[in-house]
Length: 183
Image (cartoon, rainbow, N blue to C red; front, side, top):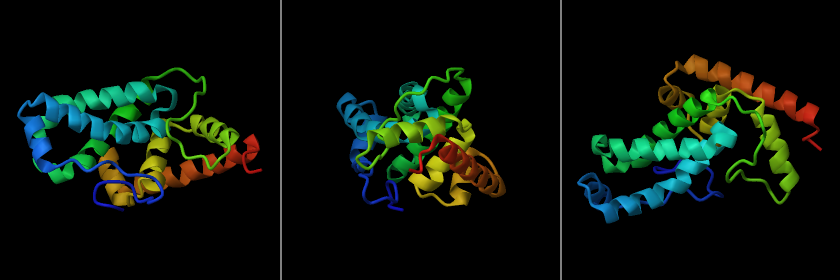
């Protein structure tokens, strides 16, 4: 895993934000704050999409609000993307839990190699998983985090991460087979 972003080198990670820009944003510089939000917004959307599904825009917005309000608490600028990741996952799970909607919508920035039907199939299968299962799949399989780090971010023990990941993958496989996704 890269220092600032996801392990998958085929997918662009978050843009590097200079430490001075972060410090200026913390002091209330509106231009620096705008630059900071521009840099983290695509990353936040990518994290919230597979967890909050149709509510991903709401989860991303809530994440950015928390980041804006809490920016002064960030002590180390180099930890920006890890700090944002924790907030994004927490907010996406919270929003997904709160949601009572079950109408499928397209995932934001879900990588689908050239087949739009594949993205729809994947979304339909993910929609059947709980927010907790989507969160652990996102952190482990998209972000490439280890179980201990994922557990710390989700506020659960490593063993819980392992069991959720096992169940999430099993549920995904079963739903994928019944959906006919594995063509």
